[in-house]
Amino acid sequence: MLDETAELKQGQMTVGVARQHAGITGQIENCQTVVFAAYVAARAHALLDFRLYLPKAWCDDAARRERAHVPDGTRFATKTELGAEMVTGAIGAGMPFAWVAGDEVYGRSSRLRAACEQDEKGYVVAVPVNFQVRLPSGRKATVSALAGLVPATAWEIRSCGPGCKGHRDYHWAWAATASPQHWILIRRSCSDPTELAFFYCHAPAGRPVSLPVLITVAGKRWPVEMRHHWCRSSRVRLSLRGSFPRSHWLGLLGPAGFGVVAGWAVAALA
Image (cartoon, rainbow, N blue to C red; front, side, top):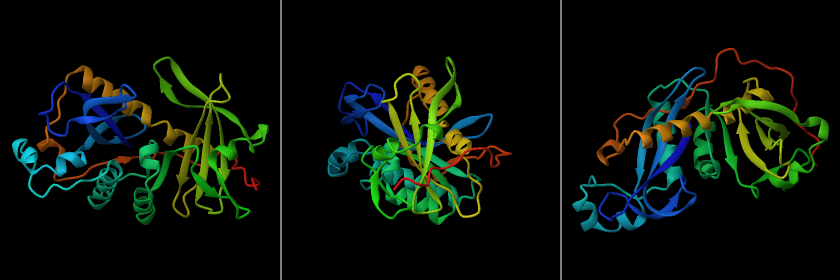
């Protein structure tokens, strides 16, 4: 599971601090941003790896890097590149995991998706409303256009996992694409039908896939967000040295016993 969090700051001396988007407030803030990798299993989860995002302005300022003791050779990397590094590092280290999940920041990264596919890892990543896919008919369409084409009978109310106030229930549907190994997962609010979220999904050839499986993977982001909240409330602080670990560990372990159950992907969206 890939995610990021921000640590709000007052000054300019903390390594990596800059005015940038902070997910915890949804606004541009003076903060550090850290990309996290979490290992999520059926009964437990843990934060296992992270990378401090160093803005380009920092990378271009040698004096500032030296003053903050940034390791020599550090180069600018986007958040998605940092995420891809952790995924490939986990694969190289032999970490057992079946799926990768993340928000739109990582869903837009073709490099990250290609790294997962090359090493036969499935993924369920959020994508923006203008993300385009090729339909079984051969034509292209945005994921937002697909939502209006899904038949009413294809929507199912399912939980994507427990939350603070009980199960997180939504309407769900999935749509086939021109690739037999890729799908679009659509989440719709039960109280507001206009509130939609979209996920681009991949499973390696030969792996059984069902709607409940994809929903479960998509829902794994919530416990990681709660872990971020706990870390901030416990005043955990991250140093630059801690953001460049030797070993890379990440993953989303597919819960044991997953099998094919009722559910179908809408194929006739042309």
